[in-house]
Image (tube, rainbow, N blue to C red; front, side):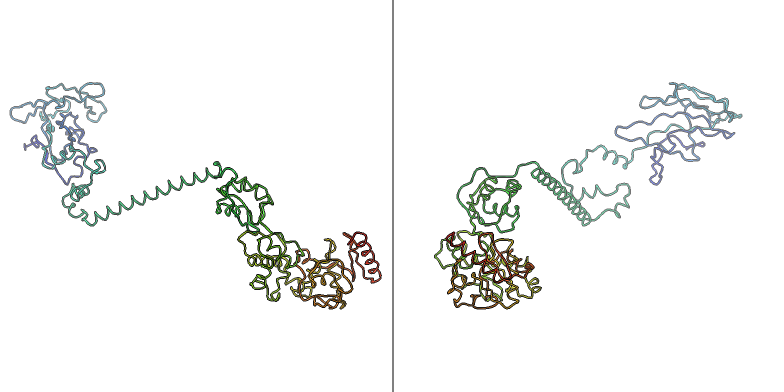
Length: 547
């Protein structure tokens, strides 16, 4: 240390100095100081510090109160007046201004705005006559600084900067606990290292949580990819791809039961389950606007959808039994036995012994509850199951007619309505006559007249004929409406919807008699004499046509 400032040499490292090493600090420019008038002295370039390979340059701080001897300046107060030669740059580069010359400081002489330019040549002593002290004293200038001494801390820093990257993210290796601790601990402050370093449990917890987060993200990503792929495949298959389908007419035989009221999609599912068609989509496309009904169908296995639809619309392939309106129970039993290839009387015995699900007011009599419609029947169908199906169908149809409520409006029970409907079904020949026949029944009942229907005698005798003799009218049976007034004890057949509706909604009229003279010619009257003339014409027609 001299009287005018510090001797040349490296400045000590100040760990607590926040500006040390900051590139924004003004160490990048050397200030020439101030003269006795308060004006700044011209700046003098300083030789660059020696560059070290792989080492970052750090500017040295200049502290107030420190002055440095500038090489190339004459210090008149210094004994001997020795001049200090200016040192060249270590890297062979020199500072230049924008004109290409050596660094040229500019200075406002005495704050008058007039700038003086000085050019210094290497090795030439710097003299400033304009700003010289009147007593011959020139302010001391900072001496060139040598590179900071490389301490142990700096050496460790540069060694770490030069060594290759060993993080597992780049190398694919896994860190040990010690290495992981070294990566996460701040190396700038040893005191803070001991306080902030996570313990082993915390590090393991972070690793586990990190691993779980990655796993969850991977699962979600795979789910999105899989869902999107499936959605795209479904959309393509639904809108562009043809539905899977068999080819040809198939092989073998299989009976398929299609319930009444089943939709086309439900039919397709049943056929697919029985290995008739390959897909529901192919079947629904093949059906188009065609009408299919429930029933038992004899089809083939592994048929094309078009071939299956063709067979289902062919009556010969349908295993069904059509029960017309007005059939008696006895005739239905015979038809079932014939369809199933069973001995005569098998179904009749099943009706007597089996529980068919009849309403309580039927008193175990299935007559009137074997609803007429088309039924599916297969080789494996049991008679009792078939009869149960018919009773269930009757209950469903009577429910549609709102039988109980409508019968109460007529002052009748549901069973009486079914009996009246069975009489209408047997006596009426044409659709337009159903409500008129119903009115004749109600008029006679209201007047306490015998119904006198031949159909009741035929039912009692178990026959079907138009030739009723005088002796037949005396046949002893509760079903003989010639002998007994009022309604018979039960239905005489199984009526359909039209007969039920006519029983609930009779036509308006005062008729008491009617007779069908010939097909399509039924005559109604309330005059007994006229009725006798109509009966005479009926007999004549029967004689002429072999009735």
